[in-house]
Length: 394
Image (cartoon, rainbow, N blue to C red; front, side, top):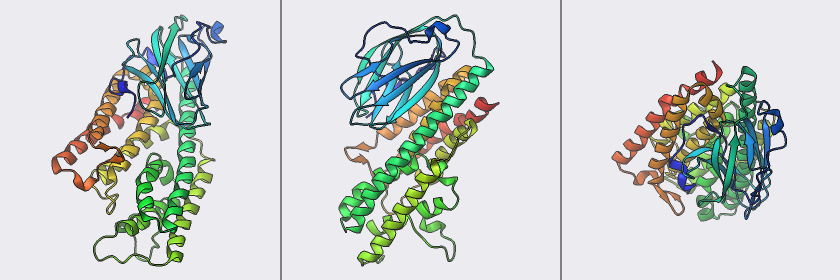
């Protein structure tokens, strides 16, 4: 479960600030470069240890602010900036793994805010006050928008690299379980591990040879094409009636080792990617299209029926790309930002209905009406999301 306030995304231009963690340092020290009057970005260092979240300053001048968040704890964490009421979410940095750092650059107006660091990504988090003073700075200049764009692409690249790194680790665990014949363990690991792939699927799809090796569905096989990857093993773990599973350790090892090798190659290739703002916007829309064409229809996970795990991961990836660009959208089209905030919250509300202690209900357990409601939520988000790239880059 996410921070309780997730449903109340704030549309205010004043709040283009990323969610920063609550602070154990309650001094009113201003960030070191605040004497620049907000004309250059003010950097706030944030350290989350799991039991405390310390900000280098709890006050900054309005304008561009960089929150540099380091997770020194043992759990994945989230970092929030909330409105003064502690409910409305101004911005957020999600999925910061242990030992990792992420930056979020935002343009903030004067006002009082609440920060919340959320180790484990559950509960209300560790909270504190944050103040943005009036620097007297005018509207964002072209150079400032370029700074925000550079920050957005850097933030997204860090997210992709983090997701892929975790995908590699978890895929190795999954492959080991499958090779050892521990099918119950492999089935339990299948959907949570694939979520790391699904969250960055447009990036993976940019490698035309790797994507089919890792994620091709049987229904999409061309004549003579070799079938490898996740769905090949999925069919082995959830065999349909009349299907004969492989029966040798060598066959299992060959499938599992290929999956691990291809995932490692993906991680290597991702290191060389440099993103542009239009790729973030288009990628977010592509992820929603993935939901509409594969997850809502139930075609993606034909045997495991774990489509809702994929659905959530696609939405998370699209939301992360949008949130990286959100400071620019708030400056250029605040109404679109408000609409996207609302629709992302709505689709999450719909998905939350099907959460269980272990993840989600299996997709074949949903009624046609429930599937339609999910589809309607996707469509409602897809339309404004299709405007994202044009607003940011034009």
